[in-house]
Length: 288
Image (cartoon, rainbow, N blue to C red):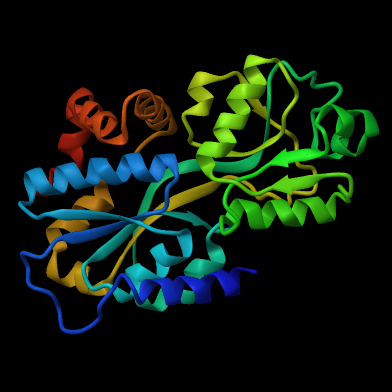
């Protein structure tokens, strides 16, 4: 399925990117964003610091995950700050790895999985294997709440449905916000629900949740999230790309920022993060 998504990404990109000679230095740097909370927040932190300290405008361009990779490969002044590797975005990265520069890891400890509220008894539903219990399937109305169809997590979740033989379930396709809205409604009513989830995300600050055990390892293990850039950007804006190489976060710094973004906005959360972490920001800018 991902090769289809990549072809669709390339087609969509034709509407977004005009290739050709290197753009003038005063043209904006494009940061592709993929509508996931951590990416949206950290991309705004990067944008604000680049504009403030490197006197270069930045355009955030929201697109699908596939377009983020293809766009960075084709757009001469572009970056993407949310490449989940080695598994989640591995196939996307494999298609463009010769046409992008990996600027390094922004944070470690990223994780995908299926998530339940902590009030769901672990002795009844502690593992994906437990979903095969007819009584559990009935409590869940045979639903696993997912996110957008092109997401790497959904590709892995479809595989998990097959490998665990969850024939009584439907994996519901929706947006990330629709998933969290469904989770919030279920928690307000103390209903059972399983959602496709990941870390970091603001829901871990807001709700008491846990991952279901995945004994087959279908949904993957711990991952790192890397920044990639076009080779032309690395050549034309070495100070900016060196700054991105130094921009690293810890998970316990990201989740509160995402919770703030959910309460206010990504823009406000990024501004607050920069104000509250002066020493960290200085370490990122030390090569300025």
